[in-house]
Image 1 (cartoon, rainbow, N blue to C red):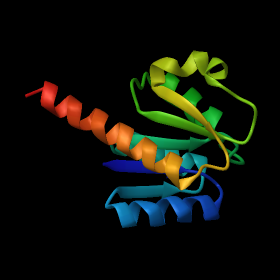
Image 2 (cartoon, helix red, strand yellow):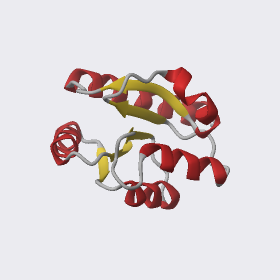
Image 3 (cartoon, one colour):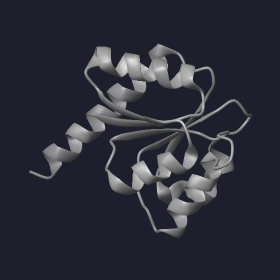
Length: 129
């Protein structure tokens, strides 16, 4: 499992990184939106956690850029403190938004996400053999 977390909260990134280290999950963190976009462009990730309220280059800016570039089927999970749901992201579904989580995110929720997308990855490998 290879995870990318994009969030401007150092506490959130530290908690995700620490959890991933304990669970043996490869984790890259980006505290700025543009840095996160560059990571998405240069490497494949099994799961991307994207905070929508990053200053300067927001989660919506990242989604707009991915859409313009024709990026498809990323496993993106949106993280937000706002009252947003999947309906707010209908223009970005082809980019790969899978679900919306509201802050604060518990370790149980993170564990469920990692388990879910790890299984999806294993299933993809099995079906391609």
